[in-house]
Length: 277
Image (cartoon, rainbow, N blue to C red; front, side):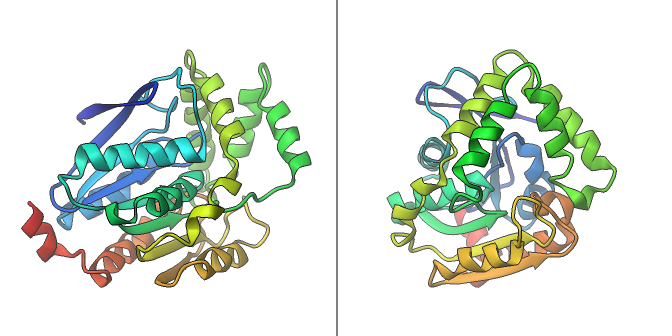
């Protein structure tokens, strides 16, 4: 494993790149790390793409101490990575949860630099009321915050079965390393998905929406997925059975070929990959 560090405003992002060809940038959900994209990245790299998996600000191997977190900050990071890694060509952005909303913002800001969007378990609008947000912000305070997160995270990935609890425990250990928990809380506080709305109509790239049928973050995941898809002119939607908030990690046998087919459909296939190598 080779990790590169890309400087951005206020710190460094940990990025792991595999393969060669057209660039795909993958950014995970709140509290998660780039390994959530490991199965998809391996599949796409084998298909002839260059896949960059990034850790969110203050998460995983990225640095802490940023002065901005949340949707718009992640959008900034997507665009920074295109500039650094893109070789002058547009990239595919794959975002999970709040990173999906950030990918939409980035695509709206610079449509010439985004060739396609893969939105996994996407948050393009706030999914809970202000009162519930206040409750969760309080719940994530120390000293009980990590215990709340561990219990919550264990329910996020039902497709993993008993291993969901193990992943939640590992996530909690990662998030409680020095400086990490304040960054996690700042990311949660900065995750105001109302920031996405002004950019949706500016998106020109084709969109693939991927939603787990058992995603616990939505009362009705299919309804939310269909609403997300309704915002785009060139869009495809797949629902993933027996998957929660990280369908690409829980059900790679379903998601991997679906994403590869989408890339071929929009003209980013193995032939173009070889041309970019």
